Amino acid sequence: MKSKNGTVRHHRPPYDCIALLLQGGGALGAYQPGVYQALAEQGIELDWVAGISIGAINAALIAGNAPAVRIERLKEFWEAVTMPVPWQWADYLTPAMIRGDVARDFVNRVNAFDAMTSGVPAFYSPRIPPAWLQPAGTIEATSYYDTRDLRATLERLVDFERLNSGAMRFSVGAVNVASGNFVYFDNRTQRIGPEHILASCALPPGFPAVEIDGQYYWDGGLVSNTPLQWVLQHGPRQDTLAFQVDLWSARGEFPPSLANVATRQKEIMFSSRTRENVDQFVETQQLRHAVSKLLTKLPPELRNDEEAHFLKKFGDDKVYRIVHLICRAKRYEGESKDYEFSRLSMQEHWQAGYNDAIRTLRTQGALDRPTNIEGVATFDIGNS
Image 1 (cartoon, one colour):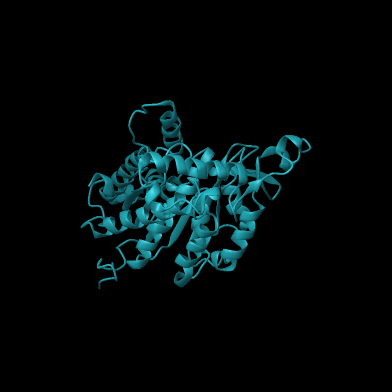
Image 2 (spheres, rainbow, N blue to C red; image 1 turned 90 degrees about the vertical axis):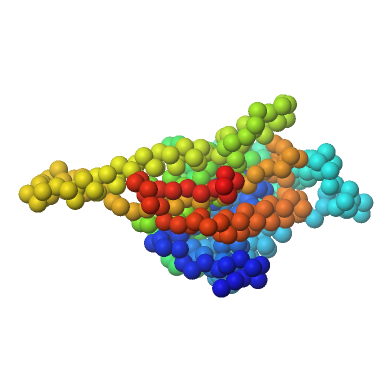
């Protein structure tokens, strides 16, 4: 059956679990709802959604709403946190005037400066009085911005009863400030509230740590900016199709200027070595498959040995398909692209995510079960 855009709608792919994994990246996060919209239109139903930072917000908006209203809620959020045009030029600028790369780069920097100095509606606002005038030892003394607006936005747009119902597995990553340990809040093991989403978004020193059960937490991106490892290595072993949506590209060119150095630095820091994690998982999975096959070849008198029983927990024959969708930066996007919350950039990122996902779903074999010896296969439309 075909959808309204002519793409063939998919029957459920042959996997036990279909997961959507959402990386952190601030304003670049508008790319992720575009991906989700494409998946939803093509009938790809999710079993698990996991996120870090802005990915945690998008994940909550998906898991915390009924399928019929998820796109609407995502649009409500992204329209609430973006501005239609640069603040003081509303009566003068037209889209045609900012078509060139140089002009667009300048306008984007103005928008980013506005977000840095004035905050972002429905998201965060400058702390008044500023942190250095707050009493030492208070949470207010540890961040430049106040995120109470984001809590109110989450409470308005996310149905936490639905999120905690178990209809879809939901996980968000954060870092324990005291121990430095990476932790995941998961609706399979605890009740999720707005505070867990806020904790995953609490990137210091911009945003304050969030207290949960007497412990303080910061943004999970400080340790790893992608939930890929959590789903592949800490979830139940099951045939899995994972859509890994990255907002930062690990691959890039050598920066030609100091401004480009800052951009490339962020890309390397926050891409979280997705491909390296995948390569390590491939090796682990190859070992599991080898153990599983070896055990079937043991003579009956050895299969009940203590050593054989020990090895059984390491072996399996599950398969994993990892589909990469990567938000690739435009030439005019610089080091401030993750806090440039203009409506125009948001719409461009959303459309890019949608287009990349549609192209992926149109590609023959993109979602096929792996048939190689390790049982793991990846697909990236950018490399096809």
